[in-house]
Length: 385
Ligand code: SF4
Ligand code: SF4
Image (cartoon, rainbow, N blue to C red; front, side):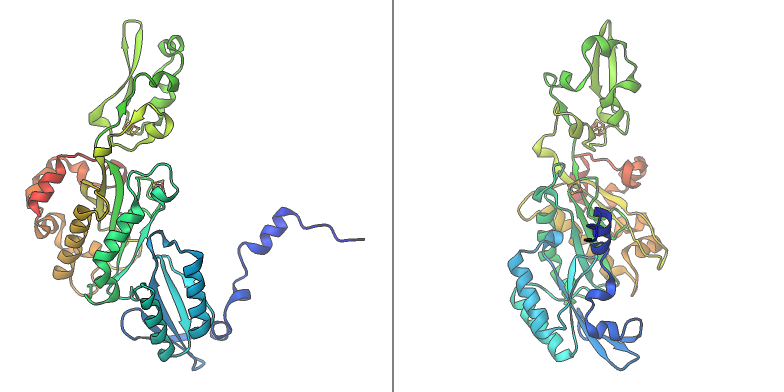
């Protein structure tokens, strides 16, 4: 009698999650949990010292935006890992790839080889650890901006902070998301760039009826039963009754340009002129310093101009430089802002001219769900820089 074929659940159990020890290199298995010390050899090469006396060296290498690699590049990495390493690679949360090897000489050779391929080594200690990007235009249907190409422009400009050529006070991570869904990692990060429309959508009245109940039903139904009214998180979509006619209207002042209406109905269209980003600063996931916190809106809206996104790059570099020049050693951006205060931080950035604006409209300076975009803020920021 032949054994019954494994069920789908049993098959999945066998491959996911993969048993850790099955695929670990021998050197790592021998020293599992026995690491007692570590040393740094320039930015991006770290020596791990085991109680057994063995040493392993990690070489940390930046990946392209969205951590996307061609099979050809992966082959080249695998060849380097086989030839100079211990046959293992690890992809990190910050979007880097780590090669493991057993001597400093080989680690330096790996650095040379990956740099020849165009991939920088770094991202450890007081440095830019990486730029995480969502997929956006690569495969996503809701993207406002092309986050991978913004990440590329930013990565080029911030490379000296990754390689350690310009040391930073502490760890820095940057997330770039194509829209407020924030798939790059949320707002609990030093600098978050989020695709954001700069003005409410326009309604194509001729298409709108396809997204609403028939006129007779619409006239009788309460707002609470109209799907489009319900998808709007701020009450910006509302029914207006004029005699026996009922109309769906968009109240611009309440709209946070989140695009949920557009995702649910083709009658909502955004003007390409209003493609841009919000920039949030001072978030942190770790419980170090002043503890974890969400980022706070620094810039409600900035235009996103491909291919080099000069405005976004200039603002991010300016934030990083201001923090670098004024922070204490080991002070993350969040802790720095906490110590000097938001008002002083804006002054140090040279955004003094917009400080009053933040104070008058406090929800602009709050976070996440309350952030909204207003095109008129950008000129004020630009003039203030
Ligand atoms: S953040 Fe937005 S654009 Fe990026 S992958 Fe998520 S849904 Fe798509
Ligand atoms: S963009 Fe968002 S807030 Fe504005 S009307 Fe549409 S659903 Fe409402």
